[in-house]
Amino acid sequence: MKNFAKINLNHLSHNLQTFRNKSKTEIFAVVKANAYGHGDIEVSKHLENEGVKVFCVSSIYEAKHIVDHIKADILIFGVGEVDEIEKYHHPQFIYTLGSLAQLNDFESLPFKVRVHIEVNTGMNRFGFKTIESLKQALHTKHDIEGIYTHFTSSEENKQKTLDQLFLFKEWVVASEYDYKYIHASNSHGALSVSDPILNASRVGIGLYGYSDFGDGLKEVLSLFTKVMHMDTLNQGESVGYNGVYTAKTNTCYGMCPIGYADGFDIRNSGLDVYIKGKPYPILGKICMDQMMIEVDEQVSIGDEVELIGPNRTLATVSKKLGVIPYILLTNLGMRIERIYEK
Image (cartoon, rainbow, N blue to C red; front, side, top):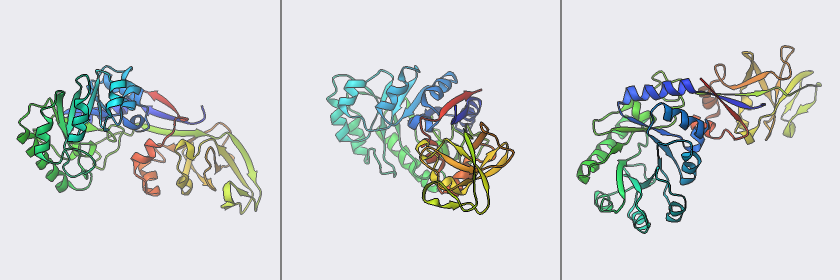
């Protein structure tokens, strides 16, 4: 096991309870993109044991990946194509309905499906944009169980969020329909806004420990590699592609078997990694499958190298690279083994 991520399930449970306490709503766990790099199957199984009733994914293919491992409902955000639904439909699947064109396609299905209606209040990706079209959609043969919208800027623009919420509420009331679930809040929204009309929140990045509002969340994932080879650069020798690093003195280095194909971004080169709590600089360019780091006599082959953890937090890496945590987490590849701990 050369490259591995430790997934702290106790921290995951803590974060779930934090959102329950704060939002006073049903929490829909967003496990799309392999649960933001944490492993969708194991994360979903654990959260179902913690009482989560609805999981959210981006596509029917992501839903297929977890459906045999949980009994809870799975809300699919993406636009479902009729041929995919006919081929892969499962009773646990709930589809998003967001346009009259899509409604016409859904009406051609030979069976009824469960849907949540998406309303476009400003995100302008997908969703019904007029109350009239929404009311037309309510006459479908399918089972409408919920309605939702998506905040564009809940982490930084509360007024914009409140404006969207106000518009959404107008639509919900005007539709005169008894929805089982009414949801608008994402992770940041669940911590910053509330309204009695909302009875569910879709929580993704916050479950894994990240929010601009803090609230005592605990990071779930830490990332490690190992030193697999050690050697010495003589003065004047370079290392890695394009010779961007040249040793000014004789320098001991270690090779670690992780690279950008594993989701370890080449821009990490400007940041130290840590071994036994001590910082060591990355030398030269990160390769597809390896990186080289400067080491000293305290380092041995087989030592663990911290890439995300207490000394090298994801927040620090995100700020240094100018890349949001979502990207850094979801880019973590399948060659990295996930270890689940309680």
